[in-house]
Length: 241
Image (cartoon, rainbow, N blue to C red):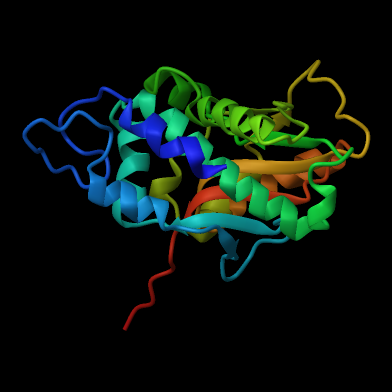
């Protein structure tokens, strides 16, 4: 599925600063410089697990560690208005979904009759306003488009809404868990899932896993237990010396 991602990325007409390393180069017209594109292109999805993992966290896959060009591209997209990056980032997320579904089920079953339901973690209303829309929902649409082009029976489903909560950057692990536990509600009129669907949670970054575990609990109570979670980046826990 990677065939068109980098061609799409080079078609973006963005500011002259590379979204991956922030270097300004004469004549740079692409979202990322060739070196950062090559770095992201070399990443391969793999399983990740926070330590300690919160109860109810589904198996999780990530494209890579939250650092380098991947971190900078996510920050440029989320915090600095580089919304055109939703497409290449969403298509990279499709690679993670493929790996997560492969791990959850037999590889031969992934393109068969079993539908795949992508459930993006919703932004709070305040975050969506600050970012001119739900950033993860934008990525999810491109993710689903890439998977459908590869023959997957997939659609985006948004059964959960987010309530206002503190910025997770200011919270420790216990604070994140407490905030996440009461932060999500089932959206009225969201509709049922297709019978036998594989539910995959989508997020941009996993840190403690509290958010994914909280949404998983809400969905499980509604009969939509997630089989896996797919994220672009996973933070690494720093140990004090």
